[in-house]
Image (cartoon, rainbow, N blue to C red):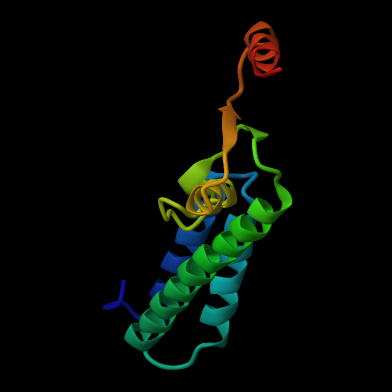
Length: 142
């Protein structure tokens, strides 16, 4: 895309943003990131190559910020839990919901901080299950 003219670049990026938006229609963070990238692109000045590099830098900034934010949420979340706590999360999208860092999502970070502090806790993750299986899983956790 860096070897095209300004109009082709803008059209190609617009199409890429649309494909990304359609890939996960309920992903609030994804739409926020797309809007942020669009704003950077619309306000950037320079050649297509320079704008592409600006966008790449912005993407790296978003990833770094996301990891920092998730770690902070994990640290704060761990402070709220008592030793021996049981935490249930439903349908956690994991790396798809964050910048893709293996320990990126907040629940993983809570677990990480609990382990680092040698504090016992149990974490359960359930996915979309038929009602009967979901009820059975909840009963098992009680």
